Image (cartoon, rainbow, N blue to C red; front, side):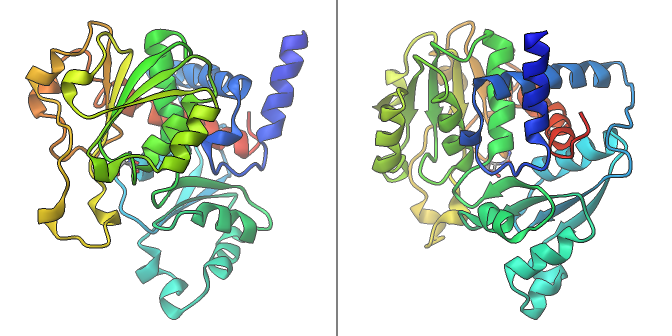
Length: 322
Ligand code: NCD
């Protein structure tokens, strides 16, 4: 009974809430979302439809390119019988092109919708949208090199499904740790749990900023920086690889793309039998396609598939429909 009441209070707390950073979650809220996502997965498996989001409209406002996040938010709303207003490339297609301010655009859009999901190249843009909006919740679908909280929810859920815990984990996070917003959100998410040790593998230019490194250490997350694949610990619970975020480079001269770690079938031999291989995608060249069929590779399996149930849950919660 007490537990039920707690869950109800947690659920009610989500109604109308902006989702801007993974840091706004705690363990009970994460586990609530995972439990609900598990139910959504059952619904999807049974091919049952639901009217949970009937008569709701979600605006998808994407200032940056997106395949997965955009389509999975759209599918999440529509699988629950909600609708979406899809605004791709607003700098060209909306009144932003006429010089309207960001805040005014948000206020105009919120008039016709129940929720705005925003992706934007600037760090802090989702927060700016939340500050501007009077009436509707804002969901951050990626703010520049800042955060990508819904990706972190699906990443944490994937790790949890495979290892049944989010504490006492050993993980490897590799690639562009400086500019990768999925990395930033995942590290924040992992620091909500105890006794996690994360090995960071990247070139010197793409290390996480020192201030973040200190922040995570202070939160109790043990961070070990390594320089080569052979330093990867045996039997890590997960490897999380990312691409170099070239679009964030001021100088986009391709010749200057720094060296970055690549998973080949040879490197994969350093993984344990239970190590899951993750990547938020898109993958460029940092995981060799021969790795895709390895049963431990989750990036085209559970990790990407978890985007839909997680976003179904999140939309339902912030719209007050669960
Ligand atoms: C990521 C992003 O946009 O930050 N993609 C995604 O949403 N799955 C990762 C990336 O672009 O490298």
